[in-house]
Image (cartoon, rainbow, N blue to C red; front, side, top):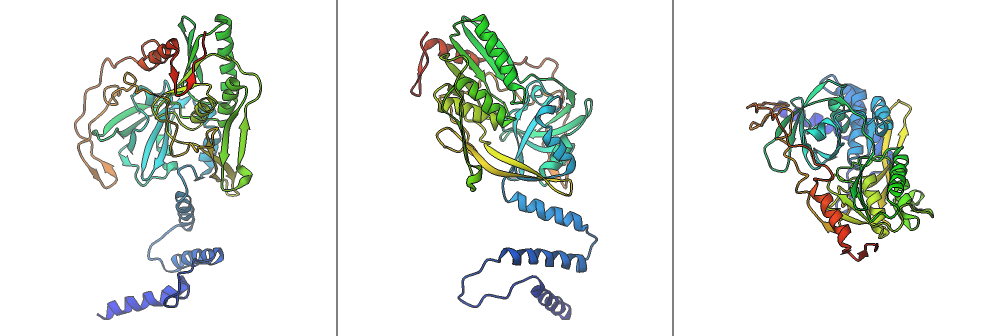
Length: 432
């Protein structure tokens, strides 16, 4: 009994060092001022330094406090280590090696935004919306975004085991090998009879040059194009300015995008400039859950100006603007400062874009398990931080070949729609 009284009394003696004076009965609670909160943080840190029972790094405590503060904001606002800062600054330009996987943290889960075309993740059948559960046997629940990215990093030839889950199906273990790849941001196919297909894989700084080249080839080979399909499915975005410039190339007039923020300093309206390529050519843009960020901005600009019809399913809903502020420590603060909106002023972030034509990718969805280079079903549960893998499955010798524009049902439906000159959501496709 004496020990219990001693512990309680000690706790009461220590509390005033980190607490404000109690409120009088009946008074409404008062929020601490910024100065009081800052003083409280310093008091807590001093008390830990002085009395905490175990060894602890003060630098790690400060880092944890900063990360906890940023976690209260949104998934894109983060404290970047010096190495991560360099990686982020070169992220889009270095899409030439790795796994090709773009992730976003939602609650305590990491969700695939989209795999990059032609990369190990895409070849393994990873799709938008798949959940990453573990990396090399370690659960990602309590990992920071930076720790997850560090676990996925590697050089060509390195192997990594990813535990993935789609919906409520059993988790699947994928063993992926880092590879070098060189992916063009735009590829094109002449579908015949005056119809053309362009695949935009991601938005890079050189996208505009490639896009102009393709438009010029279309106009040179076909003086009177009848229709164009632009495929943005599983396009995770990239450079926002590239999306704005690309939309401007097709619009010639109207609002491309708007930004909305708590501070009016960041509010702006971006207008198209006169002179559009492929003027009058009807366009259908293919979208799905993997269409995100800059790709959503591009699609919204064309839809909002009645320049194109969107076909597919709702997009991811990632439409925020970040500033990256280098810090004296060598780290950097990435902070969301504004949100992108459609030409009509409707925010994209968190809700995405709705298609004019709802069409599911029946032929595009591949079995995550059937196309994996090697895999295991995981019937077990987490034990501490380790996953216990059981039951090795055999490797698939002949996985289904990827779809081409000629064999993709969604592309064929878009071409048929263009040929049929249908009225879609009040947008009349231009006559021949």
